[in-house]
Image (cartoon, rainbow, N blue to C red):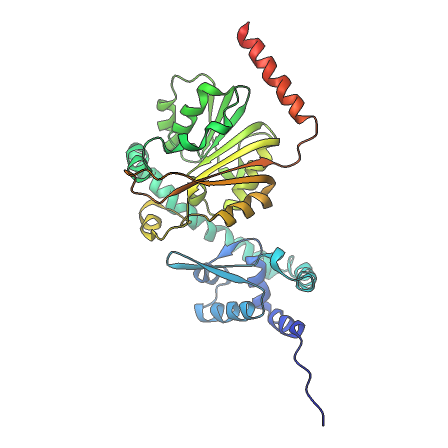
Length: 339
């Protein structure tokens, strides 16, 4: 009597990759998360078709998904794949990446991601004048002070990335050598100029967080205070911050813990409903930071917004003599001030 051998998992994985649209879906989900509706817009395919392909890829272990408010995001984490799956995907990807279909998908992806940003931009255009009051009602006055003391070195150049109306910059400026404050909203920067009129060591710069107007390794530290939940691609922003921070420098992220306040996405342009410790640790690590420290911040009883966290990390790649260089730098700063 003959028996049928169990079907090898490799054939299921090959079958999942055997349909051209599914490989395009997988290429789009490599390194980013998209919703079904976003994939429909990029692929120009009906929801039923996209959902069917997503189920096939998920059943074969190629992608995962997670809920975010009323939406569900799908993505492929290449590091979570088995070695054989990674090798198989790299072979398929090499053939697919330069194809006309993939190029068209990349072209259509850009405006889809831009739509995520537009919700935040529209909110800031309308709210810049009263943003301070709105923010204090949600999170309490002075929330940022709880996460900053570890950054304050008098010789440092600090980047306030997504500076908004400038209150974090205002708190940092008296204690550091210089603050480079960057924001993509001209309305917010106009409010910041009024707030920081008396600070002579602050430079306000207009620019996107995904392409900072800051030279490589120009910062000793960077702060992102209530910024990441507004950006379409937090990982890209963190990678750009890593480029601007010197090896051995620091980053501080203050943002919301995971929550179910979907109304904030509708009324304030939030793209993400908070971040877990695991997500922040992973994204900082993938962006070039190490020694991540994560802390939940005390809740302000008067605040109406979600609870917050502070995550601090060190830019990887510090040389053995970096500590000695920092000591000399601080000594020189003290001598200049004494003179």
